[in-house]
Image (cartoon, rainbow, N blue to C red; front, side, top):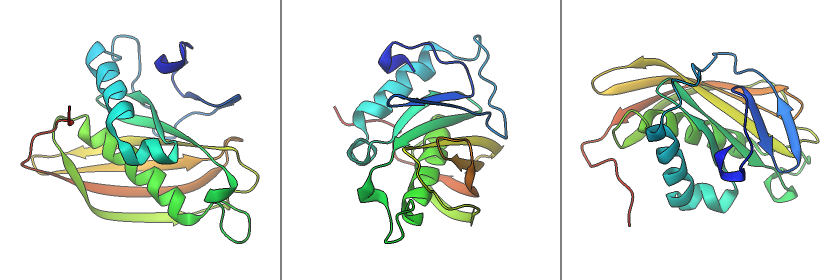
Length: 174
């Protein structure tokens, strides 16, 4: 990603020293002409301004009009008592990924609904990778499919999130 000075092929993600290549099931349209300075600047601004995501290590790696991709390193503090990735972490990664994609449409947003399915336990993973793909961009609501995978490419979680456009400005504090 741009923050590390590494050229990243669409559909691949980097987390620390681990490179996990997988393809987003709902392929983002990230051709060179689609990756604009606007989305890159917005991605960087989100990564610098979102205190919660920064605190947990969640980074936006790609952003376009079609969706977003994120990654998050996993440490033992994010495990449940069974030493797998806690379900709340999986949900958080998915919600933030979908929310970032919705925010890129130009409005502040909030989550109004979600449907999610835990498909596999997050065993022995050092990094989570998520992608969100727009299903519907409406006047008031936006709907995204979101997938979360481990660093081996195993699909851990799949969900659909709905976001409401808010009437407050979509801006960051200075």
